[in-house]
Length: 179
Ligand SMILES: Cc1cc2nc3c(=O)[nH]c(=O)nc-3n(C[C@H](O)[C@H](O)[C@H](O)COP(=O)(O)O)c2cc1C
Image 1 (tube, protein in one colour):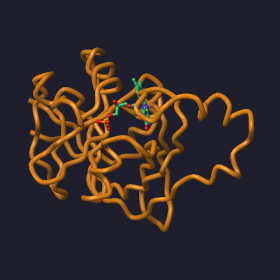
Image 2 (image 1 turned 180 degrees about the vertical axis):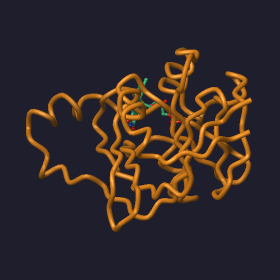
Image 3 (image 1 turned 135 degrees about the vertical axis):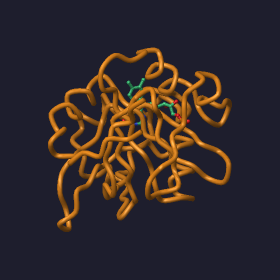
């Protein structure tokens, strides 16, 4: 069962939780892949409710989003297993099936093709309406040093030399998955 919500009624919960991490999920063909994010923005552009996710260039998630321009965002609401965020934020879908490894429960989406994840029940279904690689020439040196270290390769899950692509997802449905 799903309880439909007005996303901005939950803005505080969403943004507070972002600091500890939640999940962005994509799907291409039969492959569903999810990764942890701790950076993002919730707001309005083009009169649409938008969630922006910042995904480094070499993430497997980036490949999937570029093939199927839709994603779900899944946010803890109530108790949850924190090891989910750790696992999905350190393993790549290139090498494993994170959904299967953790035994996560996929929930049929309402509008898009990408499922929700029941264990982190606050769900945003998003359609990508815009994407942009951030311009390294406009990023302050101080941030470059800490967030884009040249000597760390792309495959590292933490800060590395890859810049972020901002994926703007129009929030087309928002709900909480319930029993
Ligand atoms: C708490 C946490 C937050 C993270 N936030 C982001 C993020 O906002 N953007 C990003 O590109 N990677 C982020 N990562 C790293 C990815 O989740 C990690 O590299 C993941 O293994 C990528 O999976 P994929 O290769 O299947 O896409 C984060 C990792 C953790 C643990």
